Length: 125
Image 1 (spheres, rainbow, N blue to C red):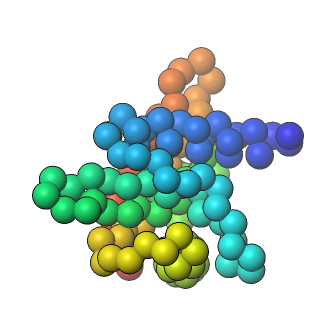
Image 2: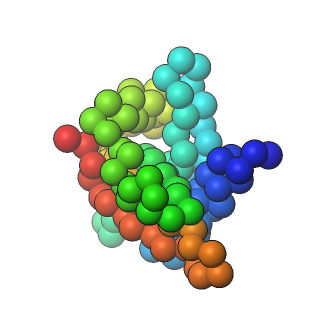
């Protein structure tokens, strides 16, 4: 596995652990949909008295800030692709409902330290 893939996989594992600590249930990881691309993480955020919210998480990981904050890499174009991917995931899994959201999770893997995680909820613009 090359360095970028190793970094990405470590960031996605840290992001999955983060949402699980929040009490969310991970529904899918690295879900691919043909020409549209890939959803890094799909999770269910519980909501008392309601079915919960399906959250499509884009995970961006860096090993420092030399290329800027990981969350800066989540552009409007990327959000639009995530919206398409989210609709495709809902169709493929026969999930209906209007409680869906797109979040971005930025992970920085500093040497010798636990991952630094920034979670931006509702990045749909």
